[in-house]
Image (cartoon, rainbow, N blue to C red; front, top):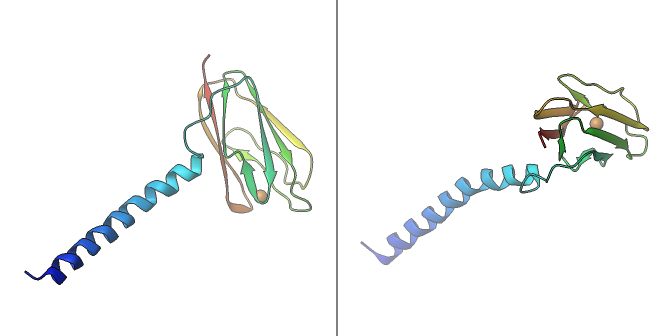
Length: 121
Ligand SMILES: [Cu+2]
């Protein structure tokens, strides 16, 4: 076997490794790395068509407050058992009385996704 063939194989292996690694990187970015530590209450900003931070963690009974800060761009906050109005300003609050992971979205911006992780103290 030629040296050229072996180096082609090495290049292929590297390319495969990159393709395999990329989805893992994307997943990590979604959550901003490790899950945040839970706190009594949390605040999420709606800015640049993004929930910031995308994941917050509160203790059971904690309240999350969403704060609109995206100019004239309207957004909403919609989960399985909570839903704000579709508006361009103001705040929305929801208290989480049971542990679990609550995914939510802005229904008019498919890329806007967030998550609230609720844990017992
Ligand atoms: Cu939106």
